[in-house]
Amino acid sequence: MNMGRTDLDILSPSSIDYPKTAYMAPEIFTRREIGLQVDIFSLGIILHETLTGILLRRDLLTGKFVTPIANSLSLDVQNVIDKSTNIDPRQRYQSVGEFHDSISYALGQQNASDRSKSVLSRLRSFLRR
Image (cartoon, rainbow, N blue to C red):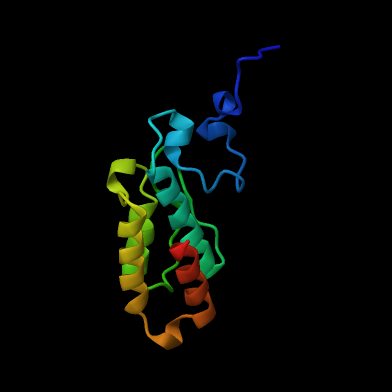
């Protein structure tokens, strides 16, 4: 019995229990330094799922999307999701404020008929917390 072993010690890309870990940033599995960008990654996954109902998934080794970003979203929103879920934390938004500004701008670019007001309202409420 290994008492010093944690759950993170047994995580690897090949042992990932999807969808439980779909919201977890790649650096959690590679044991790199963990910072605010793990939350930014999760926000990107949640954003996609909130707007489309589809859980977004990236290959943690290659960074390519296993589940592609929904093309029903505007290009601006797709770019926000792509940046926030980049496998390199240095390429993600560096603050929640930066993420908020980008998604607010991107959602503002969509026509009202292209999005559900209730989804937008819930997302804005979530980001204000």
